[in-house]
Length: 290
Image (cartoon, rainbow, N blue to C red; front, side, top):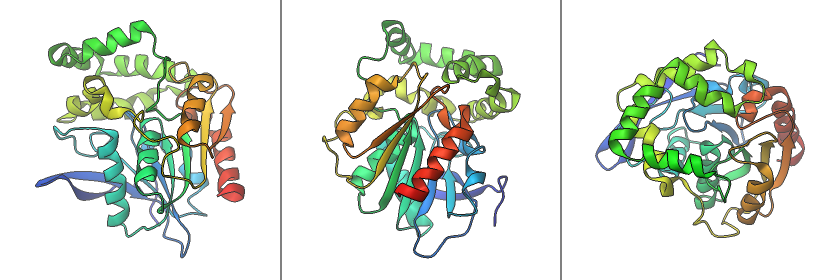
């Protein structure tokens, strides 16, 4: 059985004739006839962002986690990054590991990517747990934020601002608003999020959502989508970027079967911000609902 520090890699042909090295970890062996449990991180994240969650489940489930293309220790090519690309990556990874059935646990952009994968492959997903997923924004983004994203969509300004924020101070300023328990934004977390910003090609992946925001939306999905199996939305009550009272109803139009659970004293990075409560909720869902 692998431990939390065992990195594994494989080459994925993300476009015809173009390959990239993808990092993943497999924390426990496959369990006959049981679906695998796959954790997918959010924007700017990496599989270490699940370190407070995965140990609670690796003894009872076949647990895996991946770094999405362009993030963590996966390669960062000049690709057309999108939710569609990440959904294809999830499919390719499951095929590579010979996994047919999966329960997906996704945070933010990873949740949106997991939902799109489930829509496209509804027969392979046995459960969908979305933690503060992105992809639907409604009118939640304030005018100042829209102006900011408009600025960094400019190639020159975007690269200058990327360079300005690709350091521990910039990373801490970006992370703090996503946490209610701000003591969690410590040296270790800041270092985890800073390191990939210095990889070759990081500017391409990190600026993609601002340069091509339509590639990161789920607005085009049918309501309801093709995935009809069990789904759950787990949300931090203090998420100001994606406030639950606005965004949950939009997701439930796509996933009308989805139950919603709001965790108090938690913000956007709910699985790490309030990891004990999140783990308890996920354990309950896995044991009683999935």
